[in-house]
Length: 408
Length: 231
Ligand SMILES: Nc1ncnc2c1ncn2[C@@H]1O[C@H](COP(=O)(O)OP(=O)(O)OP(=O)(O)O)[C@@H](O)[C@H]1O
Ligand SMILES: [Mg+2]
Image 1 (cartoon, each protein chain N blue to C red):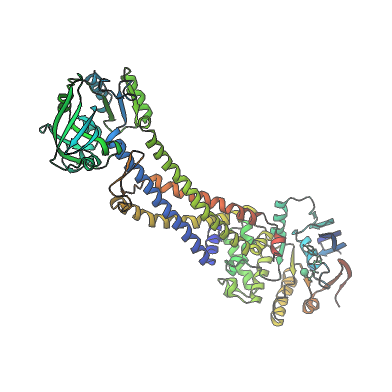
Image 2 (cartoon, rainbow over the protein chains, first blue to last red):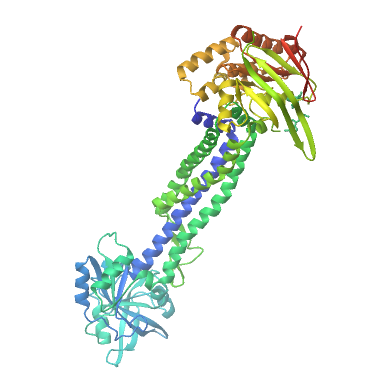
């Protein structure tokens, strides 16, 4: 008779309760793994939208630009800077910005005109693949523009429609010209959705009479890197000291906080859920111990040392939580993997895509089953089980045999 | 010539505090049990029989006085030492529900030997021969709930004698079984006593036990009222 089989037989003896406990723990574990995978998916999608479509990892501006985005606040030596970045292992792309008024028919709206380097931009963002209808910019179509989906609705234009742009050129003269919509974007974020107006760089330069320079350089590592965001920022800052270098966490603090809080909310949910399951476990283990109190008294009277009784009860709990973990994995992994391919569709709740605080949230909610989303829920399940059995196990192992034998 | 003394109680008292009331369960009692005895404590309910057995068995300590087992005074021994002493030198047979429900008769019988760390081969030999002796060799693989009350008590006796303890303490071992079974159990214990020299101390109300016991110690209000070799 070893302790292991003793514990296993005790679990089988109270079979129904054991099944209920394992079922409850396993089900809670499965839900938490699925939930964690959903949160990881949410973070991944949000990052992909915000960083992968728009912000990039790091951006470079002249020092005054972010506070006062002026058409004259230009990075003049952009080719030199981008060459340096290339040597350090980064992709980069220049961007040009200007405010203007877009008019079509009797409607008009303020827009942020964006001059895109069609060769370099695809190296740093995936925005060229994020067109809802029509096509992305093409250098062979200098008057073709791509606009945000809300802007298209506001001024009432569709593919092929014409838009007049009015703005102020660099020399102070009036800049205006006629363009044709060749593409409408999917949701990227409030800024682009409402006011995004993309044109190829050459068209932008001729409209605003800007021969050289750019307003922003977007930087991403050219291959997978182990460097942290802060390390990358510091490296780029050291290489290009004359300009302001900021990473996406500094540029989009709200987004950074939402992502951080989402991760933290997982831990909160884990604690709340498992605290409830832990009380169930505690209750089950207490019933288990009190039912067998006479048995513990007798085996202690016969000379069983306390640590062995503690071990028996711990083994019983560990066996249950182990089986529950396997159950949780069996339930949660297929479900999460399914939702990696077939996302939860929230578009009936939030038509199109919703933006909150200027950040676009994809209505298609994908799972991302990371090792974290599996291990964290299981770790917390073990932790809470250990906490829940501590009292019953100590109680049973430290009880005086006489009290236990004559326990009524 | 005196036989070796197994148990020696010197002026032991046990006083329970029940609220404001003090209950004297055992009152300045002195007693000696020698090797090979087959003795019974008897007396009215509440006279202190169980309390005396528990103090001899190192499950309870006296409020005053000395309990000496095989020459060793229990007072001052720590928990671990007392637990060892119970494991190695004392056999217990309780009134009922003695056995571990999830273990088979065989496993229950070998329980103490396993705790002692007796090698598995030797254990198997000893336990099988003892089960043979108590008449349960065929039922070794049964769980307690598949055994009758008398068979369960036989397993408990087997478990108690397996480690060859100095004394077996049996608190009303026949209280929960019918007459025929009680006689069977008494036959068994008598045989173990006369053939193997196992020392027994009972507590009992049962006339059948008193008829068989060779020494009868009568308790009244925690004191010895009479002590004598039975006729
Ligand atoms: N844990 C306890 N707390 C308080 N009083 C107790 C306790 N255990 C026993 N007593 C008291 O001590 C006295 C002796 O009890 P004990 O159980 O030894 O009697 P007994 O002779 O075994 O009785 P019975 O024949 O009914 O088993 C009784 O008056 C009982 O009420
Ligand atoms: Mg009693």
